Structures are given as structure tokens and as C-alpha cells.
Length: 288
Figure 1 (cartoon, one colour):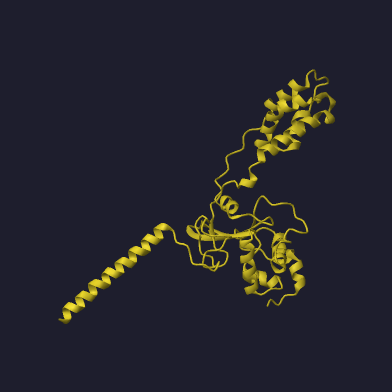
Figure 2 (cartoon, one colour):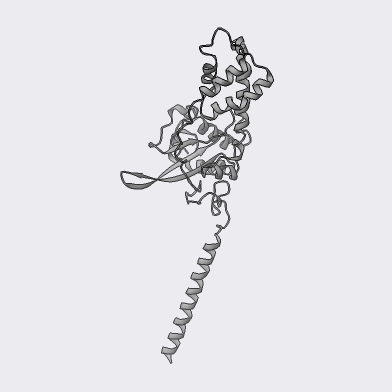
């Protein structure tokens, strides 16, 4: 049982950070924090999840450190983290890095207050966009239309009709696709207006095209993580063999072998049988 006072569990600010590059990572696509984010979990798991959720990124999530700051022992914490993994709230991963010419593994724990299924986690950790994050383009278009519709309230000279807003929506959405925010777009369209704007539609369209920001520099590819079993730390490749972030052994079942592993194992058994048969015949011949 941990010896720290239960009140320490209420002060995530006192929790230490992990070594640089390690520790907690917040997963994307999380709903806003509420008072019932973990109501579906047992009391212990809900308490631990709420504590981890409030920790800053790069916080140390090792069992020993958590036990010093939570009123649970290491065994209880280990079991609870396994349960949180199975419930879709966390995944443990590792990725190779090179420091001063020496290769090493860096370990992270991704945490999400919003539970996700295995397919979502596997897509995210493979550097792909999870299915639940794909309706972003529609949201950007809606924001673009909203900005255009507000121009008339900002300055009456730029009043646009509903049809004109819809016609310019694509050009405005391109600003957001290139990383611009609403303030930047509004500033570009409303700053330095002439005393008289004869045609608001033509004026706004001309500014949208003339002041369009450059495309952002291509980002380096997202790191590919190797998912490991939350309980034992054994790698699971792309995560496809880890249901709920746990390997077959830690789930209580027999480990699942890939087809090539089965063939290799059978080959070794056959070779051992052939070797044993030859040895037995040799011994019998020598005895006669």
C-alpha cells in the first residue's frame, strides 16, 4: 500500500515529470472535460483515470511514481492501468531514437479521457487519421461561411448575401486549410478599406485571392510507434495482435501466433523428431 496521503492524489501539480522525451502523451480527438468522464469505470479505475487526465504531458506514469502519489499500491495500479487500456483510455508504445550515435527505445503512454476502440488506436499510432477525425473539412467550410456572413456586421461596406457567402466559401476555406485563423482572415478582408466599396462580393473575392497566405511547409512524417502490451511491455507490432492494448497471455488466454510463426514452429518440431529418430537408429546399430 502506498504511504502517501490521499490528499496527494488531488494535487497533480506535485507529480514529477519523466525524463525528456518520455512519459505521458495526450491523444487527440478528446471530448471536453466534464465531471462524468469516467463514470462508466469502476471506482478505483475512475479515480486513477481522472488523476492521469489532469497531469501535464511528459508526466512520469511509471507504476512506482504513481504509487507515490496515489492511495493505491503498485499491484493495484498495474491492474488498474491494464483495465484502463482494455477500456480504450490508454496505450503504451515505444519508438526507436538515436542519441549521440547510440540507438535506444523511448517509451510513451498515450492517454485519452475519451475511450477509443482498437481500430482508432491502431490508426492513430500508425500515423494515420482516425475515422472519428475525418469530418474536419466540413467544419472548416462552416467556419469560412460564418466569417463571410459576419463581415457585414463588422463593416457595412462588406455586407454579403447568403448566396454570395456560399459562392465565396471555398476561397475562404482555403485560408483555413493553409493554417490561417479567423482573426487573420478578418483582418485581411477588413483592413484599409476604401471609402466606398461598390461591389462587396467582387471586393471580398479579390482580397481572398490576392492575400491568400502561402501553403505551409511540409511537415516531417509523424513518428511510427510500436505498440507494446500495457501489462508486460512485450511489443505487439502495429497493435493488431493487442486487443485492448493487452497481449494474449496478459488477457488470460494463449498467445496468438502468426501463420509464419506457426510454420516455423512446426518446422522446428519436425527437425527435432527427425534428429531424434536418426539418433535412436544409430544407438541401436551400435548396440548390435
